[in-house]
Length: 73
Image (cartoon, rainbow, N blue to C red; front, side, top):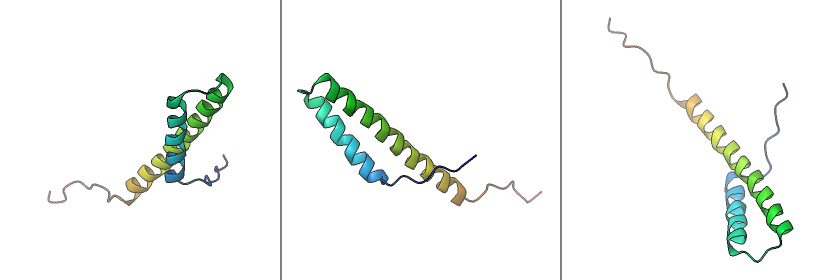
């Protein structure tokens, strides 16, 4: 199993680009091909954002102290 390289785009960059994609799609006036290309890019960006959120959850879980049973018994 090989580790996947870190994305070059930060979460914030991906989120901002995704918001721009959504604005363009909502504005309309695009050809079908343009709309499909934007939709596909939006899907890629959503996956990238999810990647960063998953990594953040993993880091928080790793930093959280383990819960130990009460040792007063």
